[in-house]
Image (cartoon, rainbow, N blue to C red):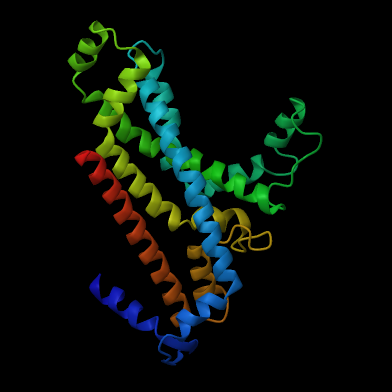
Length: 269
């Protein structure tokens, strides 16, 4: 592990095409600030992070709370249905979603039948709707993964705590706000950090849904997809792609540190 990390850091200071590389100092870093595709990829990656991670965390928590209710019928069926997308073949999952979001797919047909839209939406032909489709796909695939952690944590909470609060007349919303949430903070921190890392490294969904183009008009290109294209699709630019990869490393490190810092301060408070 150490060798490729050190070598990629050294490569980030190399300039040139293919194997014709030479030491360029900070030329790649300067190039980042002037590269419109990199700036769009960075913006798209942060958009997916800001929008998708909170949605996925909240949905996972709500699903876990609902499935933790012993009176809910068919809990095993619901739990399996929510978790199965996590272990579904990526190719099968991508194929299903592409057909669902096609112009004549079931999503458009359903929305038109409900009179929510007057005509079919070009999900992967419009920059805004392409982002929406990818966010829906990621949320559907990974919410169940986080839900399992929340559900396990909820089932390990001593029920006598809730019984005591119920006897004291504490309403359900207050028990959730002041008992459940504080006891789930370690799990919330873990799932947030893991989801952040996964979203900032987003590649599979974008590559499969857009055939690696990140289209339309680079509206869905992410940092990981840009690294792939720089290395394998375009004329290889190993040094510059290594520089972009270190941007991901630094962003992940900073955001993870901030999340741990916020969690620590709240525990102290």
